[in-house]
Image (cartoon, rainbow, N blue to C red; front, top):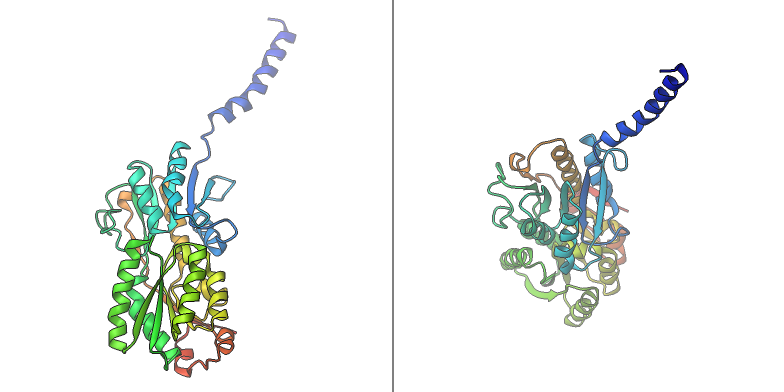
Length: 328
């Protein structure tokens, strides 16, 4: 072989090596992420999910891709969104803090790993065999909302000691959480000597209608049930409560940051961080069946003093002393 031909052959091979190396590189894993609202309402939740992924060694756009699916407040879309992610053959499905989306994912696949966040017992929901040993393709975090109903109602009574009639806003679409919430609130109300009136809302219009009704019924305070859809409408709820001059209690701090009066519950952003951590660990090879369900153990009371003033309320000093955060 002539030297010129040898050099040409060598140069061609060298040029081909990078292409071959790139072809042999594994494809970047994709996580399917389902959220009840839109990108605009996801707020700190998506940021917390990414933070959890980062803790596990994954950075979006660098070594992992996230396929976002926004339900836009339409809770009937979960089966459709899950099916779309399955067709894309994602590596993991993260359903966020959402019982309905979690159940839709579990019903649709028994092979793709699922990382969920649910307020209800995941064993009773059929998501896992047990908390310590999930045993299937799903695991995640169990945070408590409905079980805190009595505590939330008691704190609301402290904030508004003159209250005798309390409205309870629930989303009938989220039947499992709603049922346990109503049961616990009714039991707590009896012990506190309060009268309870239920108001249903599963859409934006129904929220407005519910507030119009509770205004006519002249309730003294409002208990907003825990629900992912309500969380996406937190600004609407806070504005409506202010317009109707109704002191309201919520299940998470996001409502208070949006102008709500007070909340008591788990830090949902931290739950999303845990979901991100587990999604990353699964990408590294761990199996959902072996990852125990994390249970929230830290609860926080957040009070918006400015909203209290607007409603003409003086926050009792003992309640202020109990608060984990006071927003001025």
